[in-house]
Each structure stands twice: as structure tokens, then as C-alpha cells.
Amino acid sequence: MTPHSDETGKKLGMWLFLYTEIILFGGLFVLYAVYFARYTPEFIEGGKELNRLFGLMNTVILLISSFTVAAAITAIQKKESRIAMAGLGASIACAFIFLVNKYFEWGYKIGHGIYPNSERLADGPGGLNIFFGLYYIITGLHGIHIIIGMTLLTVSLIYIKTGRITHSRFALLENSGLYWHLVDLIWIFIFPLFYLVI
Image (cartoon, rainbow, N blue to C red; front, side):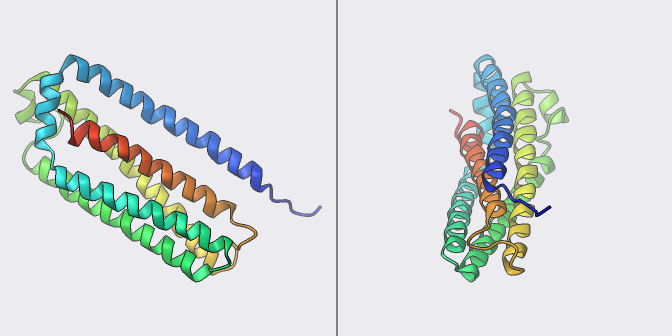
């Protein structure tokens, strides 16, 4: 029996998986909307506590990483494996910078007592505690997805280097790119909901 690789099936499987991810984050965004309607002043106050510059920097970083992933996929189709590996390397570096920024941002907030049920928030309005609870859950979950995406991109890079991904067989790279674009798209929603809330 000869091995068979169903590239179309792999892509369809990835789209179905991404659909479940959309449902997951969509549910969290609906939860945010419900609480925002109930605690609008507290959510606005919470948004002012977040650093918009960090949020904007991370948005730009992820947009650049999406471009370099797309460039890597185009490059492998044109048999330019070195350019593809460079694109993936740039995307992985962007993801790492994103996580470092998030680490410092979270560290600063936690260091100043801004985390769910901290003394500072427990004594304040309940809506503020909910805002930061959602902030840590949603951005934390997104961070986990960034790490998964980095892993997929790293595996894709290694597979290009070892010849397992080529111009005629690149489903893994394409699916990794789809996943990465979804992770970036989710951040495009997270950024205004938390950093630009007015």
C-alpha cells in the first residue's frame, strides 16, 4: 500500500479546527459585551489603566508577522526555500517580541496590584475586577495560542530546511499560516476591546 497525502483534506481539517477557535473566542467576546453593557464606566476606567503603546506595538508586530508568514508561503511555492525560511524566522522573532512585551505588561500590572481579586481591585467597583478578569483570561489564552503558533512555524521552518516541505508539498506550512493569521485576527479584536475602550 502506497502512502497517500490528501492536501485538500488537511486544509479542510484546519479550517474546521479554526472554526472551533472562532467559537471559543467569539464566546469570550460576547461575554465581554454583556459585562461591558452592565459595567460601562468601570470598563472605561479599566481601559485607561492599560498601556496603549504596548497594545499598539503588539498589533504592529503581529501584522508584520502575518505578512512574513504569507511571504514565506509564496516563496516556497516559487521554490525559494531560503526566503521562506527567512520569512518564518522573522515571524517567529515577532512572536517572541510580542510575548516579551506581554510579559513586561503583565508584570507591571501585577506588580501594581492590578489583577483579579487583588486588594486594590477587591475594594473598588465590581466591574473593574470583572474587566481585568476578562483581560487576563482573554490575553492569556491568546498568548497560549501565540506559543502554539510559534511551535507550528518552527516545525515548518525545520521541515523546509530538511526538504520535507517543498513547492509541491506545503500543506503543513499553509495550515500553520492559516492558524497564525487567525491568531493575529483575534488580536485585532482584543486590542480595541481592552486598550481603546471608551
